[in-house]
Image (cartoon, rainbow, N blue to C red; front, side, top):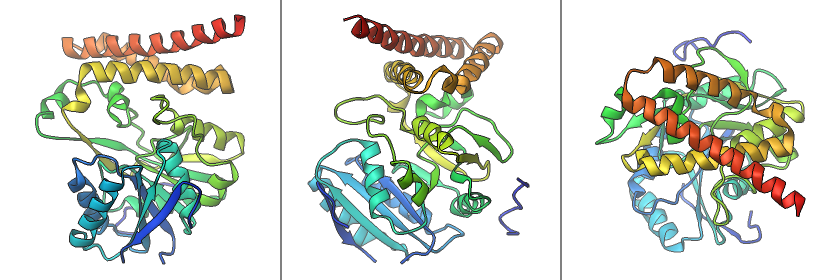
Length: 331
């Protein structure tokens, strides 16, 4: 693949009720779940930022799970304040089965060839959709395109940018990789992921046993999807110019929450290796080596402590899951 020229040069389902079309697009649907009832202004800011996209022929689908009050509140807020110029479809899902289920609802409802998944606490670069569409059309083998998820440090968190290790950006929902060229990757984050709708439908969509849901806090719908695509003969491309910015609040940087997320990440990696074999964790093995090297180089005690605690939590989660599997197998 050649380098990208600069942007300046170039229906109702069981338990699901589609409601509230507020304003057809030709190419792509931008989709996200809205569940932070206390922050409807985040959704408005995202919708307004999408108005600045260099690509204009798109629509937006917003999923709200189980909370009818928030759905009505958000619907009213969007009607009154979101002067966007593009079509917005709001979908109320009466039963919350988790984030992967919500993304599969979009897969069933969308009519466009491509879906750009993101989150309600993200702000995309104006060329985001242009870059995603350009990359996904490079080859019929390209089933998904991802890109950098960069931190947008909120009030009270900017000092963290001075010492918080980039190797741990995944713990706050950002990409820890510094890849500067177009390349094939195993997976990206679904806060910045465009997929070919027909291909995703063909492989069965997102695995709803992964991803946060009321029954389990285990993550992993992103890498599991990437693995399934590879096994079906497709690839995921990384485009360094397809950028989104993820809000980083002080709450997200809580040490206890980061350790908990790290433990669950280790548990999820063990589950993936059980399903697909240890070879699927090559990316994690390489990242662990990078983390250990960073630990040696870092001078800040805060950085060293964060790297050490997080790595121990991941390994604990991994070993705990493997041990439970052995015990269950023995019984």
